[in-house]
Length: 188
Picture 1 (cartoon, one colour):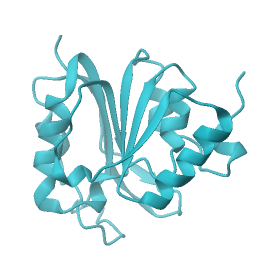
Picture 2: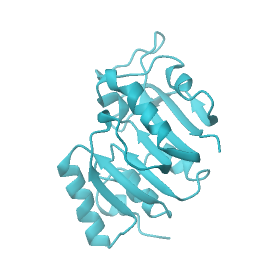
Picture 3: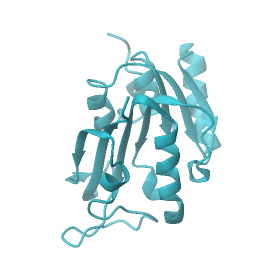
C-alpha cells in the first residue's frame, strides 16, 4: 500500500465522500475545485487519476506544490483559479467540489454548477458536498452560501444519481449541520 501522503504531510484525510466515490468512479482526468493544500487531489493522484487542483490561495497551492516536488508526483497539477469565475478551460471525467461552494458569492453558484456540468465529459461524474440551511436544521455557521432543500438535486436534472442525500453531518471543526451530497453521472 502506498504511503498516505495526507498523513505524512499533516493534512486532513481525503473527504469521506471522495474516498467513497473512488469505489464507483474509474480513474481519469479529475478536477479538485477549491483544493486548499490538496488532501483530495493527493488522494486521487495516488489512485490513478490525473488531477488538476485549483484554488485561489497561493499559499495553499505552494504547500501542495512542495508535496508534489518532494514526492516526485506527476499526477497532480496545482493551479491558481477562482471557481467563482465559472470559466473552466478543459473537460474532465470527475469533478470534485467538497465543502467549497459555501465560501463563494451566492450569485455565482448557478454559473459554477452550469460550468461544472458543461466541462464534464459524457459518462463523467460530479461530486458535490455543500452546507445547507433548512427550516428544520438551520446552519450554525455564517457561510456566504448554503443550499436549500432540493436545490442541488434540481440543478442535476437529467443526470444519473449515484448518490444523493441531505443528511446531517459534522465538519472537521466539529460543527454539525445538514449537507447536500451529490454524486451524479452525466449521460453518455
